[in-house]
Image 1 (tube, rainbow, N blue to C red):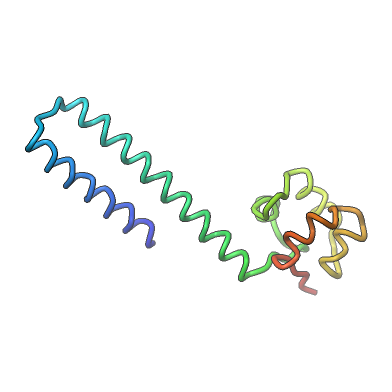
Image 2: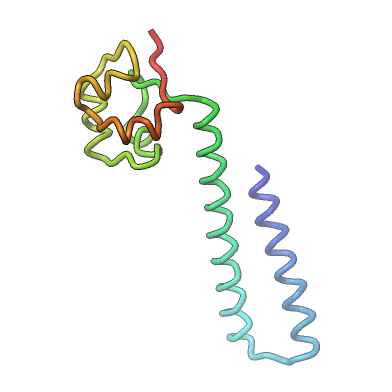
Length: 122
């Protein structure tokens, strides 16, 4: 919800700046349209980055359950590929997150990077 307001604020600010600029420097409408499109694309990219950061922060405080996490959720963990996510899913059920290493589903070095983001609910 905050991102929507941030995005709307950014568009409004952009429009206000464009209006001030055009009063002092008359511009071709097509040039103004192109500059506005570029600025909007930049804002959209920034909003996606912020949303991604929030998702990552959320996942840190809410660990993924290895027995129920989707492939997409597993792939959202740092360094987890689609093939590794498939191996995790194929190895279910788990009694302990450490089984990813003992069952040779994931290397210990990679597991250590994400161990604090994993859980197993019984």
